[in-house]
Length: 489
Ligand code: ADP
Figure (tube, rainbow, N blue to C red):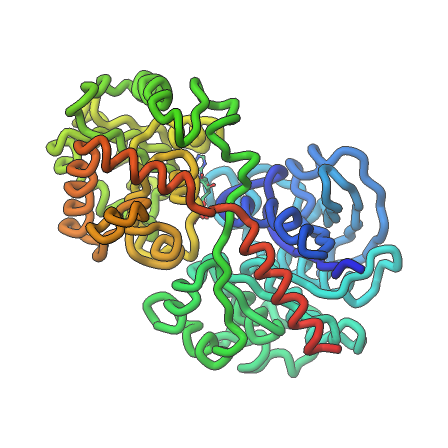
């Protein structure tokens, strides 16, 4: 019989996405299914979710979930079951899942995501007869109250269900003031150092981490890094303390969605054997970004960037290095949004380098595919990166990743140094030091490699052949679930 897992998450493709979390949550049910795991996803009923779930059936109702009336809607939009927490007072709002159209967090996010956690804990506690679960899997701070509610549940059955807390990014921890505690509906003993208390307030991620049976994060290197203050961001002591319960499982990508041989977003489809066809995609991308067509042969590479324009992603350093990138003969197409000042700075950089730097501020899924399919190299100069997905898409598309040696970037890209190239193993360029010199040197190396067509092709092909699918990681999650269930038995 399958292991029945409830995956609790604040966003999942194809319903709602603000970042990599949604890609992972959307792919996970399919990744674990071949390994005997039947996963149901529980997600908040934002307008976008309710609009795209199709036929639903109400299977449960709460008169008051953290003060709001709520219903649980069951549906199966694709191959895997979905439960939607329909609580209009909490989730029926315009804007992104987490804030208004201007990017300001909703003031009651604590209530919204405590409700999600509470609903999940009720579910695994057996509140809905037709929906029984063996294990709970919570993602990030928005779902992290689920294991905490479970742990302090009055029903022994709820407490007995093992749980996994996955950290997709330690930078977002869900800290709130002491005053919310009384409204969480937890017993007084929960406000303690081994409960939900964090620096005299309430810490959602912390609460999940102390309560869950196991903690995972999305790459082995990040799992090691978060034991240090630089990456643990205040929770390093807790990670260290639970050291034997902390695991790193790298993300995969959805290879049906991200396949250059079939991707409908591309002007020309191609495989590792027909890389020359990428040229048409590059020309189309240059035209789309208003870039001067690079000279065939000895021109510089077309670098791309897709992602949040933030300090974490090293975008301030990229801004500093742009003149060097252009000076080396490269050009840049950038798609992203984030800090208003950085958005403005990139717009200004594009104006300063007409035809060489093109910038698109916004979020555009199809364009992100076209960029991976037409760019020569994708820059990911992150200061920290729990896993990172854009470098994996780059590998799959022959868009060579140029990455900082940190977190999942260190685990998924093989630096094309002399030894790796001799073995045909190099899949990208790694560099240390998120500062001018580090990134500038990496760009120089990339341009030099690009000007050796045979070596460049070898790197592209090695990347396209590497295993970035979910097969290994799906099994790793299934093995972890099995282990926790065996311990609980
Ligand atoms: P993070 O989750 O930290 O933002 P990841 O690399 O793990 O970073 O995942 C980001 C995901 O969001 C990827 O699927 C990436 O392609 C996508 N993405 C980020 N910014 C944009 C954008 N502006 N337009 C389209 N897709 C984007």
